[in-house]
Image (tube, rainbow, N blue to C red; front, side, top):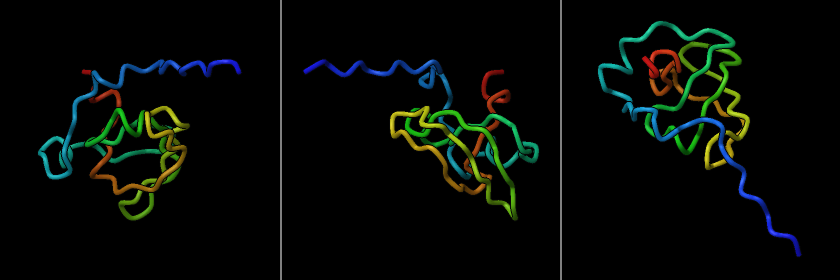
Length: 90
C-alpha cells in the first residue's frame, strides 16, 4: 500500500500572530470586503488563510479551501475573529 504524502502547506501559518476576539487589534481594523484574504485570529494554523466571500451584519462567509490543519473549507464567522492578512504581515 503506498504511503500517503503529507500535504505541505504553502503558507507559513505559524508566523501569523494569534489575535483574541476582544484584543484591541481585533476591534480596530477596517471593514472586511469580498475577495480580501483573512485568517481566523485565535487559531490561524487550524483554520488557515481564507478569502472573504460575503459580509452580512457582522457575519463573514470565508472560503478557507482547506489551507489549515483542520482542513476547513468554508465557514461563517463573526468579523471580530478575522484578521486581514495584509495587516498581520506588516
